[in-house]
Image (tube, rainbow, N blue to C red; front, side):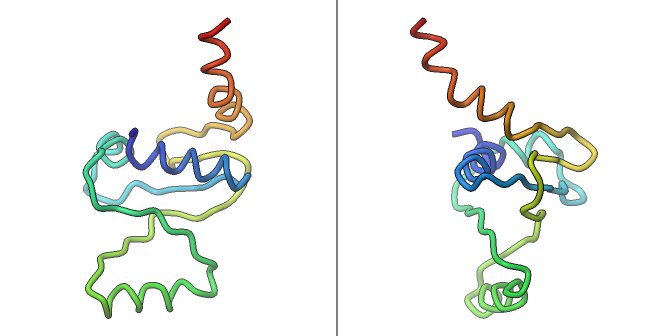
Length: 101
C-alpha cells in the first residue's frame, strides 16, 4: 500500500540508507510516487552490476528503468521534496504507540 514511495521508505528504513530519485520525464510526480498499479519491483544493485542487471532484464524481456541511487540519510525526490530518514523513522515507529496512548 502506498506505491513506490512507501516501498522506498520501508526499504530505506530497513537498510539505514537514503535514496535520491528522479521522476522520469513525462510522468506526473504524484502518479509516479503513489500509484498502486501491480507488477513492479524496486531493485537496488551495486553500480558495478548495473550493466549486467540491465542486460539480464533485456534478455528476459523485462522492462527496467533506473530511477535513482541509494545514497545519504534522506529520501530526496529531485525537484519535489526531501525527508530525513530520522523523521520518517519517528513517524513510522510512533504511529501505533501514538494511537494507543
